[in-house]
Every structure is written in structure tokens, then in C-alpha cells.
Length: 141
Image (cartoon, rainbow, N blue to C red; front, top):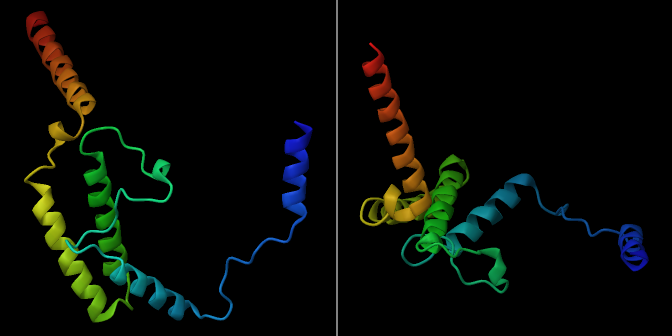
């Protein structure tokens, strides 16, 4: 306990690295972010991967969850690039490729019951509760 407290105090006393880039303007930082997104887009138009130097970053034991993670990451990147006034032609091309990826993965494999059995069970249970209540109300009339 004392060692942990000493470690925390030592880290608090150490000068923190400045996470900002004072040498760059906001526009330059945005351009750098757009460039990074364009350069790191996967060949199939998506972003994201289950490959990581720290595998615990994407813990997903549910079947299909890695692909769902990639679809969600891609949707977020599309949103960011679409809303960025500095995305330019490269950003527009990346959005087009990502949109093709999302459309290709929306209806063929990613529908609600296939993603999560628990969600399906909850939905079936909710429908049965509603049906039971409707039957009870009709019988009481």
C-alpha cells in the first residue's frame, strides 16, 4: 500500500509531457488527422482491425463481434470525414470506399438476431409480454 502511494506521488511530482502540439495550428492538426485516416483505411474500405500489440484492447468473445467492431469503427470514421470541412478529395474518396464497405456489410450478414443471442431473447421476451398483456386486457373486457 505504501509502495503504491509512493509510486502515485512520484508520478504526480514528475513533469507531465505536454500532449499538445504548440508548433501546429488547429487547421494543421485537422489536416494531419485526415491524412492519418486516409492512410490507415483498410483495403476493403473499412477501418479497424482485431490486430493489436495489446490484444485486450478489443476483447470480443461473441461470434461476429470483431466484424461488428470494424463496422462501427468505419461508421465513426465516415462521420468524422463527412463533417470535416478540410477532408478534401482524399477524404471524399475514403468516405466513398467506406460507404461501399458499410453497404456491403449491412444486409448480407449483420442483422439483429445474428449479432447477439441475448438481444434476440430479450426481444422475444418483450414481444411475449406485450402479447400476454393484450390477451389479458381482451379477456377482462
